[in-house]
Image (cartoon, rainbow, N blue to C red; front, top):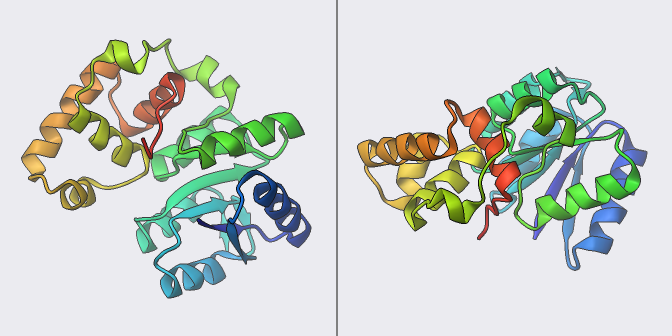
Length: 208
């Protein structure tokens, strides 16, 4: 498994890399100090599928970094790791295509648990965001999502466009839209952002 750490502080990258390697045996970690370097690494290595991204970079500020990263490499799952954990920032990052959001200011035990969740294929957002934004959700079993609907939801939460979902699941665009309408209705949400929050609540696993 490979991961790309994108942060302009080398000490933080080194510490995070060490933590990840102790939790994920055999993990290959690449480093980038700016967005341009990250985009080049992703272009050179299409097997990289996961990026941990800071929102404060020398050549990109704020959530725009998520948008630019997803535009250049839509297949990459983006997890934001940022000191700015305001709910509006979290929601904007998810709306831009991030799958999870981990606060740098979290206690080490919380940071550790969040990273374990992400590398286990889960969806993580700060608990305060769940409390402030998301209504209580039933369990995945209670939602009665079909296997195909779960496939569509996982790809949606991973930041994949409808077009890419069609391609990966070999479905027509109209079929994907029908599945999405059913998913949103069962989750009682109206947007992809709300769906990601709901997925975090029900403990959805992207790789399941």
